[in-house]
Image (cartoon, rainbow, N blue to C red; front, side, top):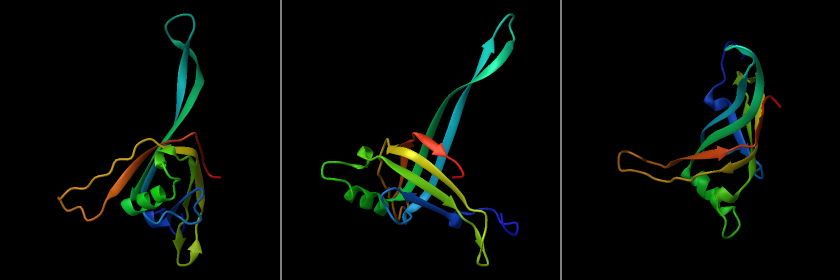
Length: 143
């Protein structure tokens, strides 16, 4: 935070590995890390300890149709973006009056698109937004 200003949408950049520039058609991203915690029982009915379990990761990347089509055109013949494996670098960098605030960079590793759903309707859609669910192997925070 700088001058009491929180990170905003204008402060985020997302770069897909293999591309030198941030995604221009980027509309949103959500990513989640979950960790299982296991209760261990001993004598009696109460929990006597806990143990960490497996970790899991998921994400959703939201882009404009033009970004989707450009990505698809970059794929080899006969392949689509569900065949691609890539990393996403997400950088949050607030700037106020030319002063750069605290930069935070997260990296989503070995991502794969699990579904591509396209569609529009007559109800005021002036452009297509595509939500891409991602399977993620690992998330590194604050790299």
